Image (cartoon, rainbow, N blue to C red; front, side, top):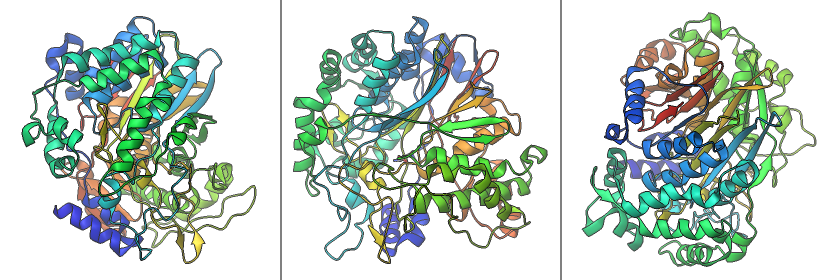
Amino acid sequence: MRKILAVMAALAAGPAVAQQAADAVQPEATTSGGFAAMSPQVAAALQAKEDGVPVQGKTWMVAAANPHAVQAGADVLAAGGTAADALVAVQTVLGLVEPQSSGLGGGAFLVWYDAASKQLTTLDGRETAPLAATPKRFLDAEGEPLKFYDAVVGGLSVGVPGTPALLATAQAKWGKGNWADLLQPAITLAQDGFDVSPRLAALIAEDAERLARFESTASYFLPQGQPLQAGARLTNVAYADTLRTLADDPRAFYTGAIAQDIVDTVNAAVPAGGLLSTLDFTLYAARERDAVCAPFQGHEVCGMGPPSSGALTVGQILGMLDNYDLGALDPADPQAWRLIGDASRLAFADRGRYMADSDFVPMPTAGLVDPTYLAERAKLLGGDDALPEVSPGTPEWDHAMLLSDDESIELPSTSHISIVDSYGNVASMTTTIENGFGSRLMVRGFLLNNELTDFSFRTHSDGVPIANRLEPGKRPRSSMAPTIVMKDGAPALAIGSPGGSRIIGYVAQAIIAHLAWGMDVQQAVAMPHAVNRFGTYDLEAGTTAADLEGPLGDMGFDVKTQDLNSGLHAIEISDGLKGGADPRREGIALGD
Ligand code: GLU
């Protein structure tokens, strides 16, 4: 409760303290599960993670946040399925065993490398705002922003889910398998039951008060009023039924009784009703968009463009740093972290000013990752101390647009899936229902997102519009950064992470660790974190990153040591395949 109050107070106080608000609520708890009994392969993968070495493979690999989901994907890949086929199996199992993080009720971004055409593309499965929503949705009668959790919990925050459409689109385009068969692992597990993981149990216990507010959510997560315990056998027949409906017709999510149920649940939620209509569902489509790429260390780092800020911000950080020889600095050298921290602050200043859904707001997308612009911005990093302050730059525009700095805050949950199939296709997908347990509303066995709170609550600042303000049909800005790093036109690394707006720092750091400092994927994802977004340098407690506190403080950075709970899942693609799974979460990599 203290944490919630801190967030509420900070939000009431305004944007200057948005970072403190984000810090006050920590990401999901770190836990490790008793999965070793599943199979010798799973046991070996868990052991590799503990030993800090990558899992090796030659033909295919999958890395994700829960061993049941990874196993489902591995089975598809071993049987000759594509990465798009495996994605369907992995995501539908994750929605069951890690329901707090992602699922049918949420949204996702996929970066896809197509081996046959040697092309990179992306699919945007981000949630949309209802057509009936107005920009002032998250303002109270006095025009002040709502308290964060007043906006999150209930119907106000729910956007039209995009994950079901994304999965169906990806599988239809790039899959070989039978759609219905790919849902079967999740259907079987939902019907027969699975053991609640320590991580899920801990998160339920932590969130019990909010989960208790809605009957269907409470009866699932808090049977007889008590939080589910780790190891408890949990079935989800409603989820199995939903998947059976989708097995017959994937579009059924958007056209029939499922959509109607979501609309009814959201609009009836007390105290905060939503404004969704079945028309919002009928109109929903996942969109294919060009990947956004930026150069780093002789590679192209490619990812998801607007409405995500992921690839642009990661690309800006790395593009600025490419003007310095990071590889010549030791990973423990505070000067390396000065460069990384201030490059991140500069990139976040541009993110706050310019980045949003470019279908609604003109954006200087190409200008933001233009090497000449980034070289110019990088000159600001030439000193020895922390920059006293940072402000947005002036990237090249196709046409001018006056915007104000953003005031949105994100609190983390989310999941990342990396897959390479035996044909050479690569999938990198980050998937989310936003906050842990999303809006806390549950329909037909899955939780509904609270993605609309990724919009700026305020619409204007000093009379100037904020790019990421809410508009009907718009997709909220994201930080998700599913990434495929390319080398000479071929994929070299698939990576991504949860972590709210810290995703950007986690992904950028792991890419630096791998490409500039030569760490293998397991070392790169396990490396202690140091992340700077809005000024404060967050250092991972209980790790060697905390040793930077003194030196970075002396340079003038505000420093804060705390838990930093990433969930990086990465696959290195060279002669063979190497998979890395973040030791901070329950995931593994499996390959062959
Ligand atoms: N909703 C956030 C986003 O789209 C992700 C939240 C998280 O990673 O925890 O950026």
